[in-house]
Image (cartoon, rainbow, N blue to C red; front, side, top):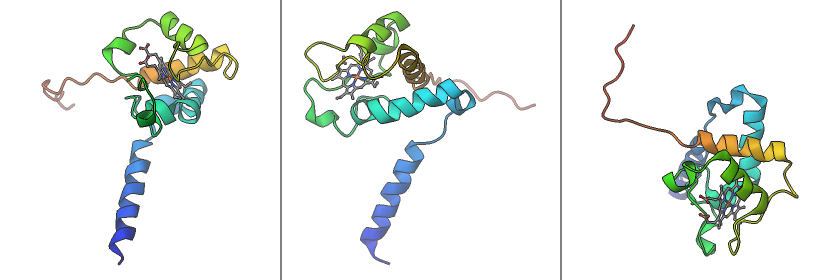
Length: 128
Ligand code: HEC
């Protein structure tokens, strides 16, 4: 078969994998936060929140890495303030006219779920 076609199929599979379902599905507000993130934030901040969305390379300053220590150690109040009012002199405008306060909270809750802590050196837990 045409090699180019195979490459396209593999790229598509890669994209599908990066959209894997997370446990946020369990709660409706978690799902809403995820959907809002994908619609409004992914293009700049990337599917995993690393600041590598499709538009990121065209922006100066680049969008923040939302799973970085610098962002994830900020309090909910600080991040909600940024979500409402934006970051001056960047492409990050405020969202208060497009998203309700509840929607901003849900999208922030989703951003929080993107931060995972892995301790690769810890041994696997013993089986039952
Ligand atoms: C047009 C591109 C763009 C879009 C869309 C966008 N952002 Fe941003 N965002 C940025 C840029 C640029 C910054 C500023 C760089 C920085 O603060 O690291 C930023 C900063 C932030 C910060 C502050 C990070 C920090 O540590 O101060 C948060 C939180 C954030 N964005 C969340 C979001 C969320 C949630 C959405 C969707 C509702 C969103 N952004 C949509 C470009 C974007």
